[in-house]
Amino acid sequence: MGGLFGVFSNTDCLEDLFYGTDYHSHLGTRRGGMAVKNAGGFQRFIKDITTSQFRSKFEKDITKMHGNKGIGVISDYDDQPLIINSHLGVFALTTVGKINNLKELAEHALKNGSHFSEMHGGEINPTEMVATIISQGITFEDGIQKVQDIIDGSCTMLILTSEGIYAARDKLGRTPLILGKKSGSYAITMETCAFPNLGYEITKYLGPGEVIFISENGPKQKITPGDKLQICGFLWVYYGYPASTYEGINVEVVRYKCGSYLSKNDNIEIDLVAGIPDSGTGHGLGYASEAKIPFSRPFVKYTPTWPRSFMPQDQEIRDEVAKMKLIPIKELIKEKRLLFCEDSIVRGTQLRKTIQRLYGFGAKEVHMRPACPPLVYSCKFLNFSRSHSELDLAGRWAIKELIGRNIEDPAEYTNPESDKYKAMVNVIRKKLQLTTLQYQRLEDLVKAIGLPKEKICTYCWDGVE
Figure (tube, rainbow, N blue to C red):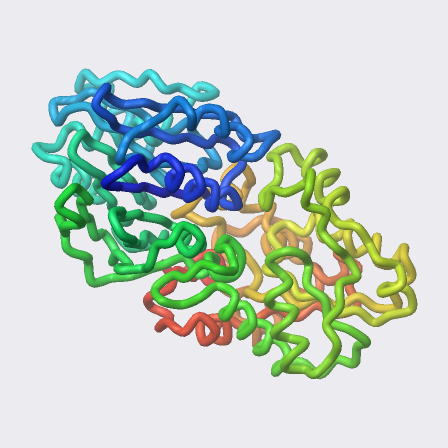
């Protein structure tokens, strides 16, 4: 997915920029980068973070950087930030989102004399495509508006100029962007968990499509927010860090509520409740509290050398990392009827092996309660499971197993009251070797978040745009 952080300060911003960007490390695994502007010009460093943390890669580099304004990024795909020279002046750019029509936009740009230098695996860097479009604008505001008007997907961005930082939330607000303030500094973030320890207080949640410019005069609105909000519901279920807040709604609080709703719709007899760490923990605590059943940790996560939330793209390596990170506690597994809360079941590959390990350690029963409905549509708006086919999703392979073929639109399998939905879930249950499997209802997930459904993107669950 990726995460962004920016700082404009009366003094050197490097410490806040470094730690603020690092607080987004759970959102990506590929690249980390920072750019600053000072009297000597723009400075930039980009590092490969596939095998080590952002923090360890940049500890030496920050001693070489200085400036009162800068932007940082954790990227799950492309090299960022980019430094661009255009008729608007030199600027640095970071983006988070997904451009579905990247090929068409690139072909059009090439025909009109543009060129692209940031190639990765033969593909055009999406951030460079955004920079190209911005550079076609009369002003930065005009360029940003062009991006939002012509891309199919979403794009949230930070633009560092000689004078300040443009912060632009994507057109429908699928990803968050929040402004914070402390004495002498302003910061812009996707994850508010970056603010407390750096001393920032939230002053504004940017609206969908809103653009602000932060300079020595403080923040100034450049483009007003649109009327339609479609923030990603999966932020609260899985992506987001527990200490973060979007639209004024805390992630961990929502996860407790999700677990509570799962419990209210259940009547299973079990010995203990657990969460698949880490993101399943909050859901499990909510379930246990509502059910008045002990919460325990049959698996603990080893984080000193396996700290990353996301996994490598190679499936065999993913499976090995997943196994190495979770250490069983046999005394809490043997002869127990276990119920696990999980944020979601994406493909089920790793989860199946985890369940097999539980039976191997003597579990009598293993029940699973995902905190969201079955995923049957691949996300069109963010880089979630970018490298995997939609047909790899648990719901889709279950449907194929049921009817013997792939279908274009699985809408008839999204109603939890229908026989087709129940049959799909039963296929997943058998495949994962679960005693029972019961998903969260979409209406309960929406209630747990607390926003009207029309303001939440639920596309991956029900196909509604």
